[in-house]
Length: 360
Ligand SMILES: Cc1cc2nc3c(=O)[nH]c(=O)nc-3n(C[C@H](O)[C@H](O)[C@H](O)COP(=O)(O)O)c2cc1C
Image (cartoon, rainbow, N blue to C red):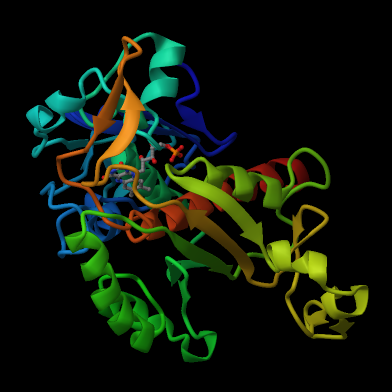
């Protein structure tokens, strides 16, 4: 199976399966002499890890990250990157393959089972093998390293819609995001989501979500006008996350219904750079960052593994009904929030190094 790597100058490769002994990644291209410890990574891992509340899967994995290579303690006792590949891993400690034995030969509708089998001729039914979102834990680890390369950039994400229910953007408060189990910036809506998702969960069903990722402090100039567009790479990075079905930058699809006057981000003279009077472009013009906040949104589909019976077929082509037991998130969009932040960090670190490589 090829295509396990992401990025150019800042590049990571992930390895491992949901039900193997461990999963890991190798981060290549991180510059030397950046202070880096496991504690710098663990906080982000903890945001993504399962089993933290009743709204996420009850799989209990501590997801304790270990650094195997690429760092050294200097004469002042500070552990720093050496510029060599950084190998990271976490153990899988709570896999229950027997939960999946009933779907050994059955394809879960809406999951990757059929296409994975059609391509590779092997059915890793134990949680979906490489198509399991367990892999996203290592994206979060790589993202924590990426953040160290661009320390002046603040990358935050929030859940802004669950099912058809959008937040009230007037209530947006970043401080709320870590105060509720949904990473929701609207406290009132978070309270509503608690009841709403309880109903979905008790019915054995699932629901989708929209996540907004914002990167502030990105200097003007990252990206390239043609095949290395910053928005192109962000879209690809977010779309590569499991269950993501759409990505928008700035106004996104809504831009199509605006006039040129409405959509133009007018400029006045500023101090170090122009002052933009709006940010419909989401911080990127012509594939290059403008210095305004980069704003991206992605839509996550409802979890396909649900407790209600759906029609499907077996590997042998027989028609069957499938109900997926095991432990699943009723809204995978919640745990996708830190993953979206991590992918944004990896793209920006990669483009920061590429920018420096081209213009010095
Ligand atoms: C953080 C996260 C956790 C997920 N957990 C589950 C899960 O418990 N059960 C499930 O069926 N899908 C889960 N998914 C989604 C599947 O991994 C995904 O739908 C599947 O790989 C098929 O890929 P696709 O939806 O991109 O087509 C999760 C996705 C994310 C981002």
